[in-house]
Length: 292
Length: 338
Image 1: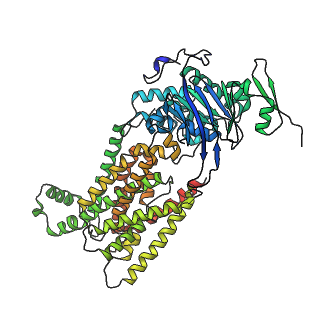
Image 2: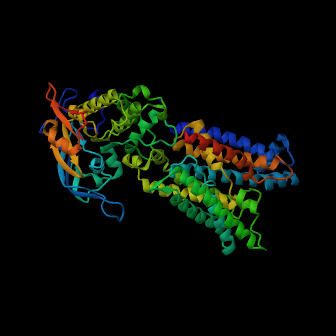
Image 3: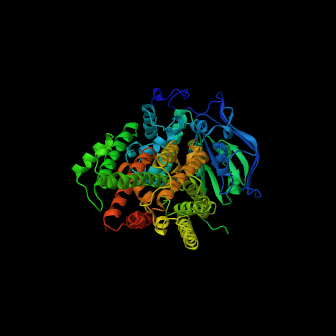
């Protein structure tokens, strides 16, 4: 990508392109310091408690949140997005508490790619991606030339540019996922959050999506956090892993630090093996044998 | 890539104003006694230049005193109901929402009738009663339509239809038991009719229309995002609660306004926004003004047909809109299931 096309609001990447991974000198972008968080329906007993945890996510970093269903992955993501306020503790983005940010300001800094919600009326891909510019506009919010340029760039980076004239409801799952990503990129966030983006995608589309996220994190300097069930993709593409188990943060670290056979077996409750590829990336395989 | 601009909105609206003028002209011309276009042009010229003394007295009676006020009312009612429909569709995230189908019109009708019984002397009591009735019905339907803490599209429609039927029964009960009082005809409240004189001056109605549509219009960019879900909209920076409150009050006000002067005319709020979407897309920044004009056109056409089809007898305009609207509703319902 061309760094000159970025708007003034975006911090310039230290080096565009190249395999620049996190440098220790860079300040953390998101600091999570949670004492605990309980999720309870109004007035009811807490259904779910996320226990104390503390970690940080840096610029240019791709972090994967792993864990079984109901382990607190989505709650953690919503805390990061600021839509949930922690009962105690803080989630800060560049020094500001995310749940206290004004909605527009927050939408300029944090973009969340959720599992797809059905659209009520037909919308073109282009209009949909333009919605990402909403937090930057005022009044009736007619999009400017600059908005169009940003949206175009977002479409290109998400690999969705050829789709821009199509109807949203006529896209395949993989195509739709790319368009939803493009809308999030049009928000030009500092922090990009994705809730199980690989769900319903075929292998090629999954790898393509993760590769794009990796590139976006590096080139744009975004901090990218992905909730996923794909252990091997996470090991391949993520800089760091946050491993959750029943509301507890068991481990935060590089894939090699987190992917330990016994730990993963305990967390996921199934027989699995951790091996290493020639490049030193952990790889999880499963046994087909009936162990019962 | 086409992006919506203020220019495109103006062009579309100008075209619709043109159609509206044409339709109004035809509505003035046709009736039990048809008037030639030449006579109509002369009459309008005299009326516009303030020389109404040169108009023959029976023309003045037919055109200026009978047809024109009714057309004016049709335009105001049509615009109100259509914008209310488009608003309810976004607010409730249901493409089949319409003030009549949801029972909001029945709530407004009941509110009007109660205000006529209790506070007939107070000026503006009927529209106010209708507004309160509309708010109460919308609130009731909103909660009836919930399933597992979320709005469910079919539960909502069913809740609306049940509410409408219950409120209609109450209306019939009140109308039959309170004998000796002239509360307009039953057809007026249940089917909608534009032939009765209005309790409020059209200028006031127009003012309320402009204010309510204006308030809803300020949220039109937010409504576009709200269609994709409340959570999504919030993540993109929309103040969801504020927007929903403005739209809820605005749409209830518009429904109350329309019902207090014309009874419960059905399906206008369903058909017009859908037709406008088909023609010009679903961006609310264009949809709201285009729907207001489209609604005015639709109800003027419907009322002119109601006046002329079986002339000299007149049909209630609600019968005309239901004849077209109910099949459209079924079509949209079947399509939304697939």
